[in-house]
Length: 427
Image (cartoon, rainbow, N blue to C red; front, side):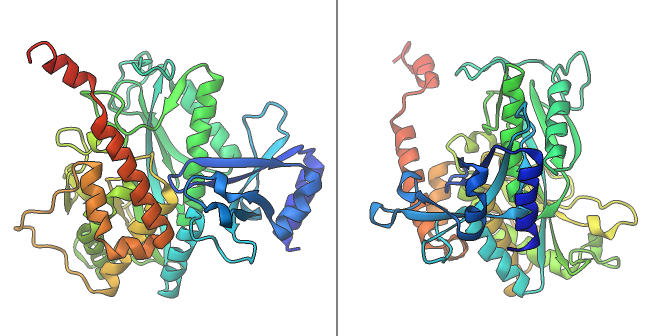
């Protein structure tokens, strides 16, 4: 056993851990888990734990149901919302019984894309701004806790204690939070996570979503990452701050270039802009996601870039003075309900395509492409994309399209309250 595996075993014994939860996500990013006892831990670390993959939507056919969850010991953490502190977790990579990575495992999809970047000499870093809402409960008629606005403090922001508890929980999970504040909409909040390599950040985002919900539940309220829960107000986005490092150097920084961006950064940005419509189904995967991507609500609608253009999908933030490592691009379309493993995969693939194929930024005089305006539009665009298919692999690509077309079909058959209120009395 390696040192990290030995550390997990000794910590479980010394801290009296009674259960270890093995975590992974399905293709849509929903967290899945099963628990083992310390007696099974050594076998789990060295051989993996077998489970029925056919029970996970999008994983396997019945005749290929056996899967192994291989715990990643570097992700071992004791869960802070358990009163006794006797439950820990580890993220898992899903493999087939022969040891080969399972092509339907989102974490393995991201690993494969990161390995490609590594072969090109790059490490991909991500720093997200995670927005979400607190409501009184999970009712279909949301009741906000406050009517505060951007950066408001008490008495308009009544939820700062919930944010504080969440930050403390995340810090105990080794997830540093740079800042937190009330967002622009009533009862809306934001946590800004310190940047990390993309795999760790995807794990951190899955953990953060659970931590926010757990703390809310402990306080008798409900937290949601639904992109647009309130009509007439801004929705929840997840702006991603992106950079490529070459060893210890930020590949996006060039002191003598416009905007402080290197040619590498411009090529990466050109890739993001060219492929933005193709990857939107992954970064914004729900019918409701497209209620946020509309003009007038601080959300991107065009595949364009700028420093302060809120309708642009890529923004160039001003780096911290004298700190080249903070040079980055901000990709603004994703929402916090995406699967971060898949979203990071297609975003990275788009940027690398710009580098490999020497893309040029589009002429600012030319009208930019509009991002997809519905889930159906996004799926049609994705289906034609060789880049997305290659980044996700055939299994995830085909299953995602089938699943989301079913969702769109259900939505098409739904008669909304808007239709009843506007048409029933007059038609």
